[in-house]
Picture: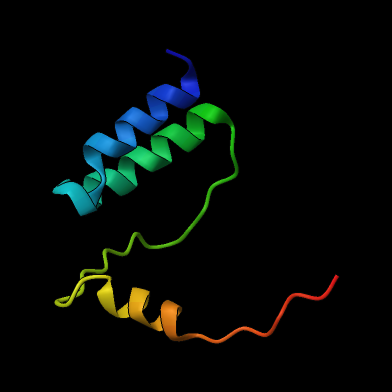
Length: 71
């Protein structure tokens, strides 16, 4: 498995949205970024959970009216 595939598998297994620990996930991201030589990113890892799910967003997207496309 290539490096990108290994990273994707790690994220799927440890992401806070699937029950992983947010602090451990942030520490793991820092380790992956350091190993890849990417610049350090100082940003919090936020977990957003809605009581109502994504149906509100989906309903809002359906109701949005767009004008005709003009090429």
